[in-house]
Amino acid sequence: MVKNIKLISVVFLVIVSFFILLKGLNKTNNYSPNLNSSKIDFNFKAKFLYSDEESTLYELINEKDFSIINIWASWCLPCRDEHSFLLNLKSLDKLNIIGINYKDNEINAKKFIKELGNPYSKIVVDPSGVNSIELGAYGVPETILIHNKSKTILKKYIGPLDDEKLTELKMIIKNEN
Amino acid sequence: MKIKILVLIIFYLISFFNLSYGANSEKVDQISKNLRCLICQGQSVYDSQSDFALSMKILIQNKIDEGKNDEQIYDFLKSKYGEWIVYDPEISKNTVLLWVLPLILFVFGGLLIIKKVSIK
Figure 1 (cartoon, chains in turn orange, cyan):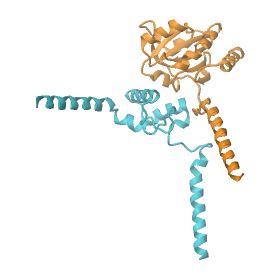
Figure 2 (cartoon, one colour):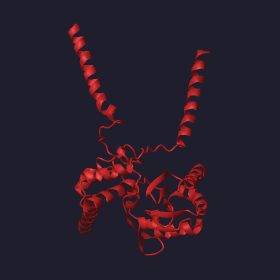
Figure 3 (cartoon, rainbow over the protein chains, first blue to last red):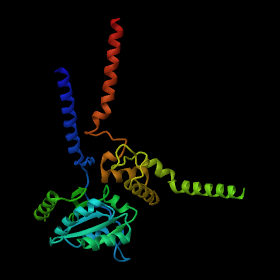
Figure 4 (tube, rainbow over the protein chains, first blue to last red):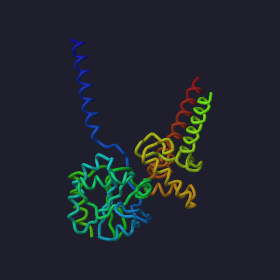
């Protein structure tokens, strides 16, 4: 009987820890501290994906009240998942969606857009990843909401967009002027 | 014999190119050793070969070329990624325990030893 209790408790423990760990897998545990400054007080030049011209960050975000900068790459699987959410956001009038193509092959990047649709009004390339670092990015995918008038970062999402984040983004854009 | 020499030459050429490929400037190494790679935590930017770390090293090199000094580069990265990116945290409201706790433990332990010794 005592042996049985031991066995049962061990099995129970293993099962419980299995489910705890399984749940933990879904959580991203990248620790990102609160930033003291979200001001965009820098500028960088980047080349467009579809032409040889260059543009600066200020020019890119100047077009509308809000800009979303989405960092993506064709080799990044979660970017595929979040693409439909970006297409959804495209319908907002006040919003300009800018893509930064992160460390990607140009042909693959164009194929990706052709296949899944183009939510971006402009796409610039970042072959060395330096521009993304200047934006304070961790990797792909990452979405940054910028308020043009105050030149501040209102919101930053590390990892793919989902329903919850989409609603939140729309709320922020609706409430902010 | 000829083949042996040829193989040897090729071998040295390859190793030579690898050497020059992996070499960053000393300054970049020095700075990146003090930076935490944020997506591969537990490694420094210097140690890591992740995309993030590779870009970071290029960025540091660019900043050096622009004439920025160490302090300015650290400050720039701290403003982007927070205090967490540097291995040597400054004393602030949040990190005061980190700095003071070892001191407290040291004093406490010392007192404990003195007490034990004096009892004997």
